[in-house]
Length: 195
Image (cartoon, rainbow, N blue to C red; front, side, top):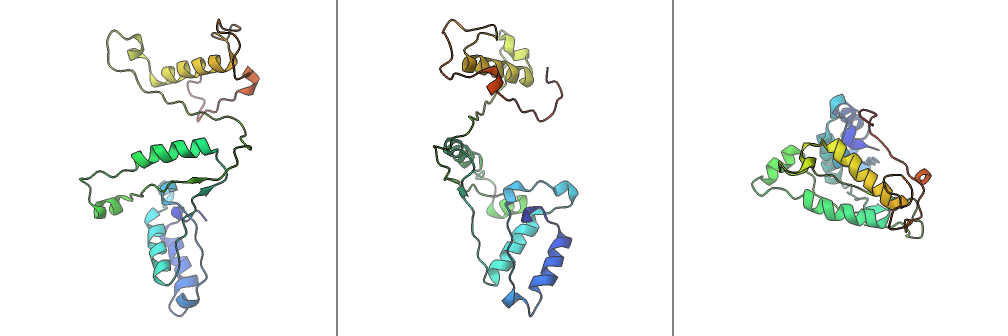
């Protein structure tokens, strides 16, 4: 599992255990991985090992089986990311197929959302902040992206709770979401500049 994060030495070990001459025809090797999730290059992992091992296994009669069914995430989230990644994973026309392979390009494979909508779980939202354009008259032009993120988050919490700046119900009345502050969790990558 997580074969995208293996290194050359680990590959040699697997080849000797399962793929040496005389053993290839009877090899019973099953690997699982996703080249797009390779994150351990700093520890010597080489995502090309996964690609090369996949070629070796298919050459001796193995099969590639993409695992695209998603039972974990909510369907609206899967649909959003399928829409987004289908656009982000478009290769530039001036880059050849060989150059894409050398760079480790992986095409987008859309997930198939299979989670039952009745099992909706907690609501998860993705808020994206873009930096303000360089308009000198715009007071937000000087704000950092962290400040813009914090402001956007405060506005969203106010909308969810039906409060104006956390000082009680807003003029528009209580929130249609019926959310209390205690229902909201904020997750941070690091505690730097949380204030």
